[in-house]
Image (tube, rainbow, N blue to C red; front, side, top):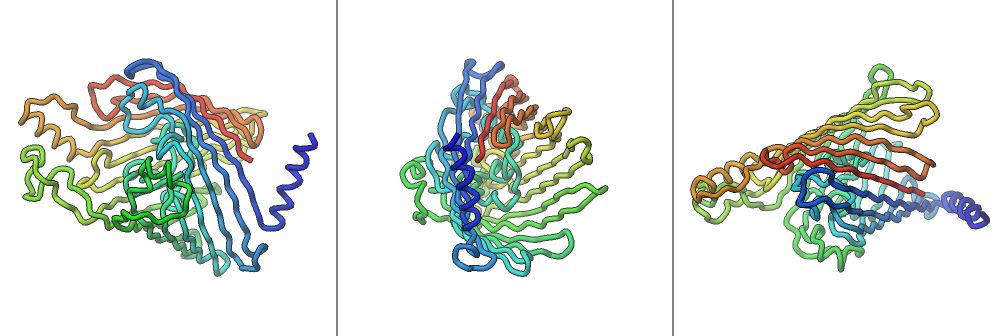
Length: 404
């Protein structure tokens, strides 16, 4: 008890001096009750260690702050080990190298009462653009959606890259932001992360710059808050065309050298709206996320759509608990599918033609304490991998989190 009291008393003193510390732990267990090579159970987790520094209190630097976050991921992935063949992971916290990473190293400065906001450093682009919480366990409904669709250029949490973004209040409920981020495939290389992921380095191998732009609107509809973001991105990196060769003929027929495209691009929409008022601490919200990538260079998915509802405080006496339900579609690039059809016809192959997979998840988050929750969930994936002949997948999951 004395140790707990000292810890609780110590942190406010640090905050008063301009130093904030945080510790987070998320673990996700999953087992497949249907489909896959065999029934398995897998467990993966993530530790996060964060520090925030109020530079006005520490250095007299007005309206400035710095942040450092280090993460560590561990465990195994049910999707791979049980050969579920889904386009998105059933344990969102898995991936990007099961190792230590420097996830944030940022400096932030605001002017004009927050009307002009500048951030720079090592940043996950999804922190600011197409930002969306990770309340669900299936990756379809978690985090910055463009990173799910084009992870080769849009590096979401816990991966960071050197970059900057500037945000401007446009008056009323409107805002706009623009960013420039380094695109370097070494940051998402598991081997590089294992040896160098903790360091604020700048390795060779940069291919271009990712330039996202986003407009935000935070309306109050019927007295209830909402949030709408519309954005687009342009990546200056060269990329292979997924269908055509250098003579603009189908690769599936010629087997030649892919045509080089001088950019990659896409667009996104995020919409969230509270739909019920406070009734004994209860409220419900709906969301819709849509991401569309260019079809010329998307080697796998080119589109993702997710919509759902979360209901906080569903029962009397449980004001912090949440029920969530979502449906989503992960769409394989139709140009890649055309390539497969041509190859099958020419070579008498029987490769499966990718299309769309449909995903659903239902969860209940039981909040035992403000810092601890348990979240059982059920996931169902129809046509996994976007292949009509693949049997449906059902997964039972359990997500738990601790935050200090």
